[in-house]
Image (cartoon, rainbow, N blue to C red; front, side):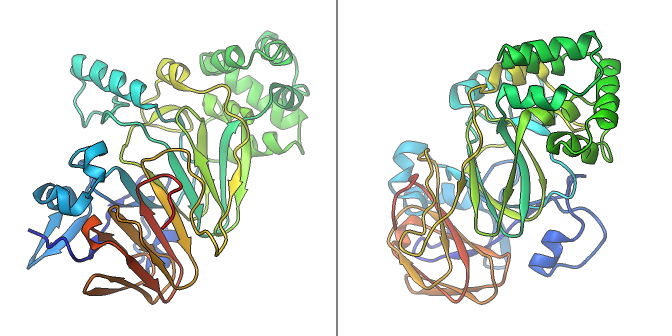
Length: 389
């Protein structure tokens, strides 16, 4: 059993999705360059891909470690979340656009998971959207300049981008719906359109609407995705969000998004439920997305912190995120994961001091209590929304 009075270095799980960068995480973590994409590194205890913790001469999955002593590792968090860590930390490095997607709220996740179980869809199936029963709010914190599409633009803005195209019946119908502020109907009509309708409108917009930022994003995406992919036109419906290092954006349940490029840390509820609508070769569930998406989602608010309060504003209790640039002591008593964003980070917990290289992470059990961070920039994820350390 792992002693609950000490922190331990995590061995993250690598995910080599096709959209991942061939350099960003590799350079950041000083990994061997193999020319292959490395999209994400997971630090956490999700049962599909738990991090590993050294235990003697063996590496043990973190979820197993937690379950051996849930009270010591989770503390009071156990009362609300059971014997599992309620959050997950990632390094995220898209080189190509990540699929246009949404994540469910808790009720939608429970119903969706139960439905796919009843239908007999295997957990590992490519045609599965719900792999657990949890919601998946998330926060992205930029390490380098980072770009994404997040939340809906106003109907009038989308209509303005669309107005320059040749008005065939499909385009005319979309434009009418948008001018009448019937966003949900316009989005549904787009995602359910025939491939030739999408391709024709994409070609028309690229010829006739040069210079519009939303159209230029469509042009950029056509370098990777075929012109009949409805995600190309759907990208016009979303806000372009650009983050500087240290800035963040919170993405709640139902908010449509597609991360475009850069290197970031990501903290989220402990879930891998994804419902996709385009910009992907993976399983697309248009009906599932339309029943999940939040059409009231507005422009994403760019968030930052300052030394007096290193915690980002987060409207859910599943996780907290502190970004530390200077030496600090965090008194929070929840389980935590500390991710080093620069070299030479030192973490002192109880009687243990760990030194982390850039891109390394450590799990800190709840029983440790106060956590002393020094030596460099560190992201610390815990539990409790905007609770202060």
